[in-house]
Amino acid sequence: MAVAGGYRLAFWSEDARHHGPRLDRALTRYARYLDARPAGFPAAPVAAFARFLAEHTPRQNGLEHGMAYDVQRFNELTKQMSAYAHYTRDGHLQLAAARARRRERTRQLADQINSQLRLRFRTGDDDPAARLRVASELLDSPHPAHQAAGRQLYADAKRTERLAQRDQRLRAGQHPGKADGRYRAACTHAQRWRLPTPPRRWTAGS
Image (cartoon, rainbow, N blue to C red; front, side, top):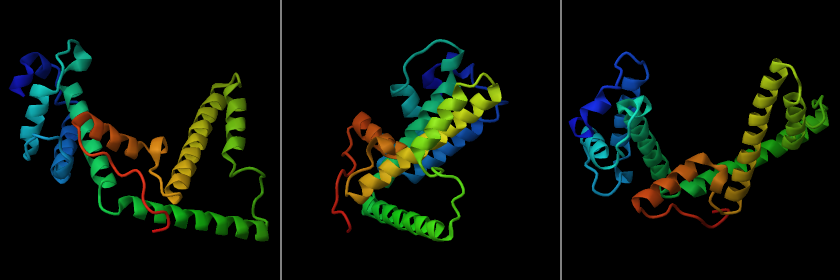
């Protein structure tokens, strides 16, 4: 920590509940995904954090760019390591595609049962476009409660839409692309640290 400069340590708050636990989680995650660490980074988590501070932390001024900010960035690095490790694991995308196919079969079966038993009371509840239209109407309301509900509905609908796009790509033998934040993190990690790119295609249905 000394290599980062005392001015950065001055903004580290031991009283802040999230500071220490965040660093602990980052160090634990780094140790778990060592194989995905950047080239030249040591195996020891604390030594890796020291190297990150010494060589990959831009000198910044201001309260928001103190040691807590450095820990947050190191924490993000370890999350990207985790994502990269998952998407470069042997057979990971094939397993993800198999899960996507099971989810699609489950959805189709549920639609069939609901149609037969007439359990769908509201038309369009499973249609993301319909939910987006409702969300738009709520967002246009002058009432804060309606606007809050609209924002939540909009976020939920967009998430459902992204997951559907992800599963469609996986079933077609393609990588999930922008529809999966974890895959984006894995690609960002590979690009930044010049690591092999995560797999992009495989044999669909394998």
